[in-house]
Image 1 (cartoon, one colour):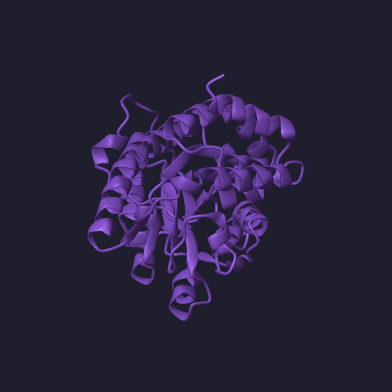
Image 2: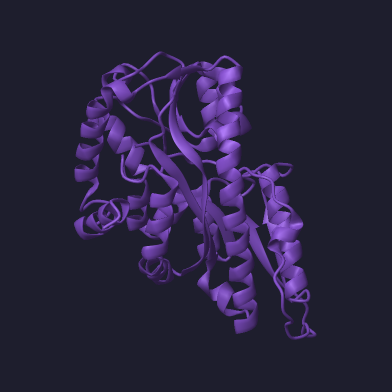
Length: 335
């Protein structure tokens, strides 16, 4: 049901990005530099992966194409990323579905409450609907380089909870540009507190918020867990994201270099998927060992499902079409 707006945290060896084959020599004008915005801190494992991707990209294009990273949210939040790319101040960005949804709003169906809860469901959905979404991004002036993911969504809270009604008196966080989780919170009768990602930790400190949707990886990486006591044992979704580049910038590259950029990005993303899944499990176990209290919400699954179904209905026609929602539902069901 819940989705997170956060970082893709994992560790990846440089060799995983390498691709075979030869390409034409670099031209006299030098490298095409792609300015890439990210929320990830400069010294994070995620940025180490990005730098490894850049080394591979430069090698495979023989220095014709290079990435220049602007990390740590130095370019603002995801809405700022998209705005700056459109204005020509940035060229590309790594974003979650919040950023993707600003370009192509219907993509938010991927995080529709209670819809995609397992990795195999997500893999099928992004594979079968890739062309449909890619066209939406192109219409918005962007090229999708690769999909990404960052673990399983869980509900974390300062206070004990088990059923939707327990959140009514709380102060749950919803990202400023996130209509999906905000709608779910509204359906269960709570008032979402709209903040940007950098404001979440201070918000937990001051008790401006007391409940957040997150993955175990993010709760550890962003230190949110130090201000939280309870964690849902059951996951309610998969964190979805991706990398986008401005179409005009992409078109500056030769067909050979376009293919290398997409191939290296895709290979990096898939390697990160595997590591994110592994590390999310490890982070969950680590939180339990540190004293985080597991909450079994399964006893009230019918209540959670009912709230999710109502939220999905309310979002239909406003965020995504009924036909798109039905298409994802069929894919999830394996039909």
